[in-house]
Length: 434
Image 1: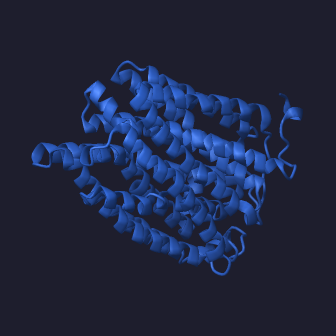
Image 2 (image 1 turned 30 degrees about the vertical axis):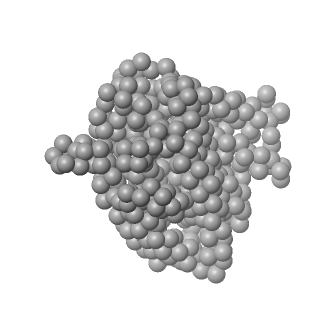
Image 3 (image 1 turned 135 degrees about the vertical axis):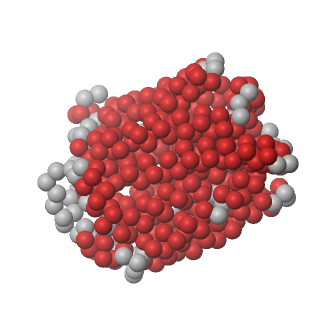
């Protein structure tokens, strides 16, 4: 279709259509990225790999290219007038590479396919976030962000439950092939039906998109933005990073099959994650109507409580108690997404939103895709080799890693101290941040 046949973003109903499509793309993004964590045990068994090698294969290899290309592609999202085309190309690429994972016949081939997934996914979220900020006024961004964040929960559920079930029935390769199909369809839908929205402007004028150096200098001076970026990064390690190894933990310490572990985490991610995303949006709206600092401090309190739940989930030998704690802990991995992305957009200048989002994703994905899988894998191997922990080594490493939640909570609290002044700095009112 040509531009005349595309959905015009200027029409009142069109922005919601575009948001739904972008959310569906995000679902595919998360499902294709995280299905491999559900498949760790069968992949490890077939390819005869250590936890360290699995950590590199499943996380670090993707993270190197995902994060490395995320910054230039985030900058491109602030400059290119065709972000919809950028999203379509990236979606098609990561979907094709996900299918290639299912066709890989060796460690090296699977490694190259995962690198391809990372290259494709690097351009998706920054461009989507930049488009959403332009499609919706600030008063509606919390609602839009909530719907978009639900895509993460749905994607995790799809990757865990569907991926695990297909693996049990037809093998782990079939899971990759099945999850690649929706992304190919969505790439075509974006390319054929979504028109580029006009960029919104705030009260602060910028002649051109800032460079990376200028953006980083601004973020360091914008203290609440800096604390938000650090809090989100650490929170991603604590939630998504530890959850990367949770299917393997459930298989080793609680003797679940790949399908059973995937189903358990699928429900927790899908139902609990959706509830967390919705609560995050509600918290953003209600707590910020009178004082934006309350949003940050409430997020800090929730993170403190979740840290305790995460430690118990990994430390207990009672499967039922572990499951209950996962239902309390996992939703926080989605609850913080809406406030964090909203604060990042509201505290940034309009022409640097895509790049600031890419900076956030760079740190967050280094934490949960590179550091967490690799560090936990190495630590588990070392503990198993030098102690009598055996297969329980993974449990002990995850339990210690749970304490990183306290670090995230501190930065959420600190972000609130300068929130009002920093909002004024970018021309945003200090109340009604949602």
